[in-house]
Length: 345
Image 1 (cartoon, rainbow, N blue to C red):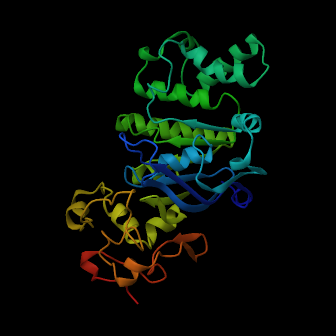
Image 2 (cartoon, one colour):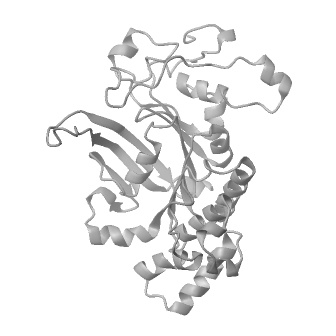
């Protein structure tokens, strides 16, 4: 990503929230508690960059990605895509915008129609959104297959005839069919073998260099997100805990949760791996139906104090481009067992 691109905002998320109602099977009309899947989140995505979004399963990563594309209707907040307020668009206007925003789903098999040939699957977006001729669609399909590393004749096969990695390449080809500017990659490698994961990530990076695509890369593997992302946002229980440039986040993580995630990344050096002390969080992730008061992380945080239990920490910029939601983020937070306890002054 160039300096010029980094100054241009493509997506601006402002105070977005999504609450899912929990309904009783006995009294379906009775209003009950809600699942706070995404809770008052704000951030931007710059043109040409990859923003990694990481966190534990169930923290709201995928929900946030689908909210940006308005596959889910937000409970509150707004999403700006260039000059378009995505949250206020009518169905006809949103349909036109779909050509510029696409998604690659996690499950490479269930997201493909098993009764359709690969070529037909890739052509479908063109049939719905463009007035291309059959010949133009066929040529575009062959171009896309080659672009993602498959052969032209693969368009005549069915999804079950491909491996998981090949099916994910088909999903990527379909997402690129309409020349999108922005693609949400919703855990696109989590169901693949490790060696195939690297191939798919390298493919996404090659496509970004060739086509100038902007990615929101959702995953729970921080080491893989480190490899592909320009910036990384760390989520926990529906909220963003920390957001920074990848290098800054790994060099100087300011949130205790981020430190615990980084400490869990294996080091490819047996001696260093044996010598280092991992930060193991105690307890379980609280229920999003009844999140803790104050900081949602305080029930598992080794640094938690009374202020953490009573006050929600402000999500603020503590250094240029480095944001965190922690009462002690402005200090040199360190929870390494060998480095003493508590935030350093």
